[in-house]
Image (cartoon, rainbow, N blue to C red; front, top):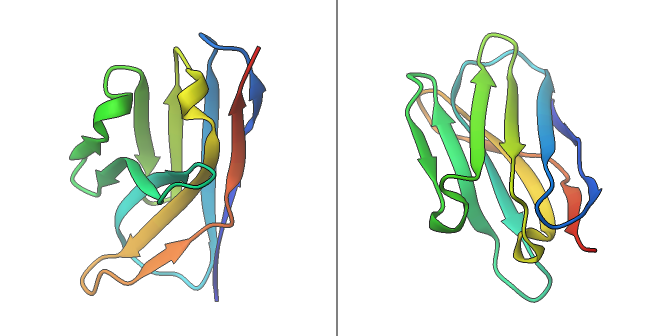
Length: 117
């Protein structure tokens, strides 16, 4: 059984920074892609950023230039540095990792990020 556990969420003022982490445990598998998604109240879950095992990154338009994703694939850990946070970044952030080959995806339970003064 695979578990993804996120950490690093919290309350921060507008303009501040947070760093999220997510680590996978359980059955060993090769990861093809790691990423972060978020869901704000009343809204659909959306892509924040993804990174592949070949280091290709992709970002949602609203976070480009402010967020940076990085990953340690052998350690099955993904990070996201979030800078210049805005109130509209407030959401539950979910970690996602997908298997290399068949693309089967695992999700974490989420960590709350609240940007407010």
